[in-house]
Amino acid sequence: MLHRFLQCTVMAGCLSAAAIVNAAAADSAPFAAPAPVVYVADFDLDVANVTPDSGPGQRVRRLRGLLPSGPGPMGEDKNPQDHAKHIVDEMAEALTDDLKKAGVDARRSAPGQPLPASGWQVRGVFLSVDDGNRLRRAMVGFGAGQNDIQVAVSCDSLATPDLPPLYQAVDEADSKGMPGAAIKLNPYVIAAKFVMASGDEKKTIKKTAQQIADAVVEKLHGAAQSKPQ
Image (tube, rainbow, N blue to C red; front, side, top):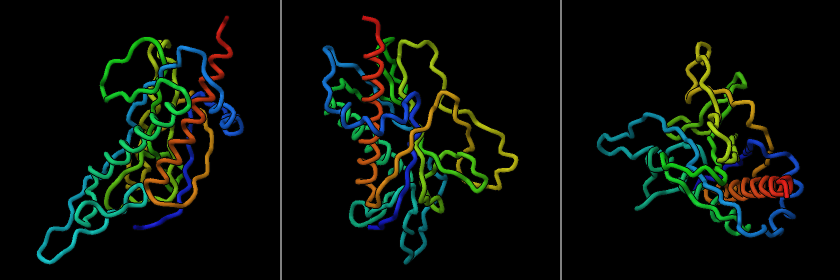
């Protein structure tokens, strides 16, 4: 399995940088009943439009994907679509589990699933940074390998009408053929930075999910404390 050092910057909407310092205390502090309900959406992750080698005697080239990749069933690499789905599923499942362990009523929501008018929603998108320091939607596929990945995350109250999108597309006139759509994060997505340790894909995803969960829990505790009695 290919091991690669990965630094991951998690941009958490409405999550203050104090979440990093207070995460441990927030994790251990119980919530008043009933526990807050959080719906975890699948994070956005693009897939490169690629075709694997298929000539006689040729092996399928190793995918240089978003995160360090490993062998799939029968020792073969995952294709880009399967790899992207695996990353998205792993992130959503790990984040949901970590929030449950912290006393949150966390539920994974399917794409397009209607949500109630109460509770919270956690959304996210995997990002990379191009040579011009512009954010782009990260891609999984040939030639799209990345060492530095960002995850833009938003934790929003569902009681807020018409939640804005996480990001907007920007003009790509000077994109220089870089992979992934160039985007601009909306102003309400506030940065909280986390440094990831080296390791394989599964460990990287689990560690990122845990740090996002810590920040979400801190956000929920802050909202509970500010709620009028």
